[in-house]
Each structure stands twice: as structure tokens, then as C-alpha cells.
Length: 494
Ligand code: FAD
Ligand code: NAI
Image (cartoon, protein in one colour):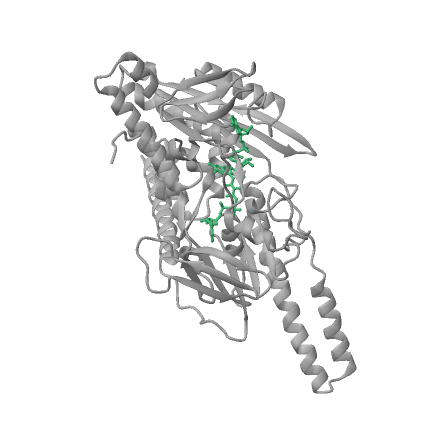
């Protein structure tokens, strides 16, 4: 009995302590204190975008050094790796969104956040023009502001190769609104198929086509399969056997960036899960109800679909193309902005470019963009230090200070001028493939460790939860996973 009493007490104390610590941290985050105002003597740092690159930069940036302005049409950070989970209702949208102000309000100095779209960058006069493109706007339709430093991190958009019908009839999987549209249409297909319809029409409505066998297409197909197995079968038993998932890929295999072993593992898992993988098949046109593909034999075939998702890679945004066109001598890489080893945009002094908008030797991933953002925070800090020391040197010279003092400052300036180039440290690639399985290609002990299966899935989940930027998001995601385990996915449609 005394053992049970002790155990009870220990449990109670642990529970109370954990709750107390949790409460303390949440409240600390909820009520940020006052911030210092903009300092006219500081330089202006403008950051374009609120994605992986910009948010990592903002997290590490010392705002004591600059007056910082963030411009982005999105007033939040989106944790893209879990976007396919939102598309199928495993996670709630807000669980993977973090308002940018939750970060900027914790900075020492005020950071101005404008929910607006940058429309033009003038690298000669060092200005950015932006516009509030939302439905409700104030009077400032278009504003131009000067910058001393600009961090250009506007990401990319989905590549359509101008294939007819993609934009009109397909869904994308890049932004939160895409995931919401996908979920809406997926449930619409199922509900419409439940209405009185011909057998042929039911087959068409229940056919979900994913174009692009990169990680986005693969993860989405896996998530769709989970939805079918775990929920559709319960609530639409007569329709569930009719749901078909087809993944179309132009190359000879899916996931070209993974090892041969993991590609085979994914393909065999998909086979088991009845996900039809059509490789060496190129989409040529998307019509309202059929997708036209060219197969290996160069024949054109029409495939009826209910929902089509387009995940065929990235292309630069218009603003990026316009900016590059202003610097034709230095910016002529069709993949994106060329930067030097310190992530400075070639030909544009004071402009740094990071993430998916750039053309580097790295893949366009969150891992790269976030490491670049953290690196830039250090660079900007070092630049501010150098400028402070240069001012100090000027004052020392004006005051005819001791030669030793001048020499020491010159040495410090030389040290601050030595900025290390960006170095990317690859932490490995992970992808969820459905039915509680994931694949991982991890760099271990100077070699690669390839693994797939349920244990890798648990590793995938813990890796993503720990990568989420805040305690709030971690709590919400864990809660959603638990909710789906207990009650399943919600199949109601707004
Ligand atoms: P983004 O994160 O796209 O941010 C761009 C920002 O710029 C956005 O805030 C946008 O609103 C803003 N913006 C756009 N236009 C303008 C404008 N005109 N003016 C101002 N701001 C503008 N990578 C991984 O490493 N691991 C993964 O598991 C992974 N999963 C993914 C899953 C999905 C579904 C997708 C789509 C991508 C995934 N990625 C993953 C890739 C990763 O999301 C990108 O590489 C990463 O988002 C790039 O960061 P970024 O800062 O360059 O761009
Ligand atoms: P992607 O560029 O990796 O893959 C797109 C695929 O679409 C290519 O394999 C291409 O051959 C195919 N394709 C293009 N046009 C086609 C057509 N007309 N018909 C048929 N197939 C066609 O794009 P994705 O998956 O959107 O990824 C973009 C970036 O984000 C990549 O760098 C990727 O590594 C990263 N990412 C990483 C994830 C992870 O690590 N888990 C998850 C999602 C994205």
C-alpha cells in the first residue's frame, strides 16, 4: 500500500510539475513585452517572404543591429513537409501555420510586418515596391521603400510547363489554400459519386490522379491511401473499393533523389497499397474530366479522373524573372537567381538571395533554405559589427587617438571582414509513403544509411515534430495525430 501511495504521489508531483512548466512556457510566449522603437541611425533590412528561408533568418537575427521590415503576402510561416497531411484531413491547417508576428514580437527591437506582395525590386536605387493585394485594403495601394540590405526569399511556384488545362482543372500542393482546395474537391468527388450516377461516372469521380513522382506527389499518394484505408472504408463502404489512386511520372522511376533501394521499397509498398504508378508517362494536357498522357510508345491516351493534383516541380516567380532581367550580365541562369559563396546576389550590391528562388548546387529544400537563413543572420550581424568598428575608427582618427588604439580597431575590422562562405550540411532526406511507413536516406558515419518501414515512420514523425518551429505547433500536431487515431478523419465538407 505504501508503495502505491508513493507511486501516486510521484505521479501527481510529476504531472503538476509538467503542467506548471508547460503553462509557464506557453504564457511566456503569449505575452511578449514592449519592444525598442526603430532607430534612425541603424540601417534598414528588408526581408521578402515569410517561408523557410526568411523565418529561419528572423529567428536567429539580432534586431539590435537593424531596422527590420518583413514583406510577404502571407502573414505566417507554413511548415510545408506536413502539408499533404492537411490535404487529407490528418492535420488541421492551423497546426502547421505559425503567425510571423509570433516571432517578430519576441525580438528586442520592433520589426515591421507588412502583409503585401513585393511587385518590383530596383537593385540600382535600392528600393522595393509592394502592394496590399488582399480584398480589404487601406489607401496605400502601392508603396516604395528604400533598403540598405535586402534578403530576397520569395520561394518559387509550381511548374506547369504551360501544359494546357493544368491551372484551370488541376490542384496544386504548395500553399495552404491548395491543401484546403484538395480536401474540398476530394470529399466533393466522394459525395458526388454517392449520388445516383452511372457506373462509369462513379469510376471517374473516384479516380484520384497525382502528377509528379517527386517527394510531394509520393507523400500525397501515401496520405490519400491512408484516408481510404482508415476512414473512407468506414463511412462510404460501398464506394471505398472504387477509389483508385494513380501516380504519373515522366521519368523511369519515382523519387530520383533517393537511393535505388528506397525507390524499390516505395514502389513495392505502393503496389501492395494498390497505388497505380505509371512511369515513363508524360502528361500532355488536362481536360475537365480526362487527362491526356503520352506513354512509352508515344501513344496519347485519355485517362478519366475526378481529382487531379499537379506536383511537377518548381519554377521561378514573375518578380524573380523581372529582377533577373534587370541584371542580364550577371543573372542568366534559367533555374533562378545566381548567388556567390556568401549568398549575395550577383550584380546587386546589398541583396542576398536564399531558398527556392536561387539556382545553386543544392536541391530546393526546406533544409537548405533554413540553413541559409540562419547563416545570413550571422553574416548580417558580422556586417553590422564591421560597420560599427569602421565608425569607431573614423572617430579615433578624428580625435587623433593613440596609434595602438587605431591599430587594434583596424585588426578587429579585418577580422570582421572575413566572412566564412555558406556551407550546407545535409541532414538526410525523409519521405512518408503511407500505411505508417516512411523512407529515410541519412548521412551516417561518412556513408549513407537507407531505411524504410514502420520504425522509420516513427523517426519521421519525431524528426518533424522536433523541427516544427514552436511549442504551440508541436502541441497542435501531436494533438491532431492523437485525435485521428481515436476518432478518425473528419469527412464533413464546408
Ligand atoms: P517558401 O518557404 O516557399 O517561402 C516563400 C515566401 O515568399 C512565402 O512566405 C511567400 O508567401 C512569399 N512570397 C511569395 N511571393 C512574394 C512576393 N512577391 N513578395 C514577398 N513575398 C512573397 N523540403 C524539405 O527539406 N523537406 C520536406 O519534407 C519538404 N516537404 C515539402 C512538402 C511540400 C508539399 C512542398 C510544397 C515542399 C516541401 N519541401 C520540403 C520544400 C520546401 O518547402 C521548400 O524548399 C522551402 O519552402 C523553400 O523555402 P523558401 O523560403 O525559399 O520559400
Ligand atoms: P520534383 O521536382 O521533385 O518532382 C517533380 C516530378 O514531376 C519530376 O520527377 C518530374 O519528372 C515529374 N514531371 C514533370 N512534368 C511532368 C509531366 N508533364 N508528366 C509527368 N511527370 C512530370 O517536385 P516536388 O516533388 O514538388 O518537390 C519540389 C522540391 O521540394 C524538391 O527539391 C524536393 O526535394 C522538395 N521536397 C522534399 C520533400 C521531402 O524531403 N520529403 C517533400 C516534398 C518536396
